[in-house]
Length: 288
Image (cartoon, rainbow, N blue to C red):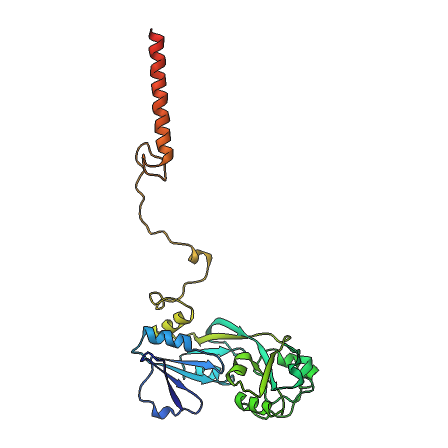
């Protein structure tokens, strides 16, 4: 299904979600961007529309097991992906990190503290495979080494089951916020690592529209966003000389200052004049 998001300024962003019928497409977008569930590309899409109002930007939501495939197959041009992902053959830029959280029914014992540790989850029913890093390392101690088949692979459905006190869901915080309900709560899991979010695109893919979007995500201005990012080295960061030649200093001037205009030059000239007058007066006295 396709959804058209009206941005309120006359511009339009096409958002494609699961189950889209590609046979009904009538126009080729200038750029197709995939985004992991919970990641919000809205800010960058609005900037795109401001700079390129005549070029369609298509957004496609993907889940963890799809994000590598859509890039490999060429179904999308660039993607906002969540780690873990196989980055072989991809260029990536680290954007930000998300907290891993556990979602549970409102009023459950897990909500007694502001944070939880994985050990507190050992007796809970895991509704779906966690979408966070580090969980496999904790599986043996938690008793999830050989868990029963997940009840669902859809985060929204899993959180709905959590609301019914069926079990818990472990997801990045943005996913918990996306599917927030009045009958569930979530808490950060302090002993799991944060979940990185990356911008990723195929290494062999280069075109002007892609460079524009990469520039927008990296915060480059409209005047510079169409250029590839320079190498982040000290030499590249140093200001470049313009090649203009400096005019030679005028006679009697101090290097770096305009002749006769600096306070130091004026005082030196006055002192030299006073000394010359003093020498003249001494000569006159001797001649008497």
